[in-house]
Length: 123
Image (cartoon, rainbow, N blue to C red; front, top):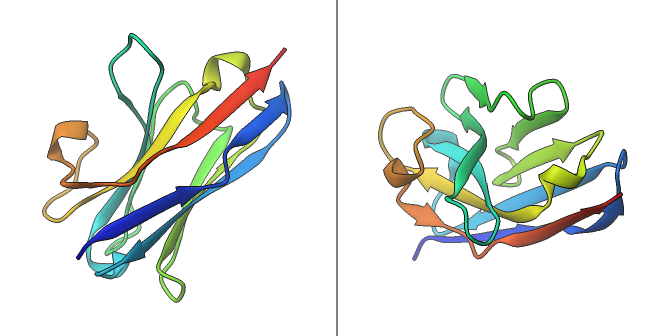
């Protein structure tokens, strides 16, 4: 059974950093693309960043580029999202997800989802 466990969220002040982790069981990341998405109440889920574990390609949303870094540790079957210089508008529930074919950053193309971890950034 494929399971994803997202963790690392919390309450921080603007300008602080957090590192989110996405641990997988039931499969290995090294053959698939993994994405981080976020959602706030009343809004659609939006992509934050994606990584292709096969060739290392990365995608970042414009809003997080140069502040967030996605990485993959295949030995631990974990994908990380390092978030620096956090802003109030980064507050959301963050989800990790896996797509089993192809490459892209549309949420509907990701087949497996974790339960989400809440990030709250205060001013």
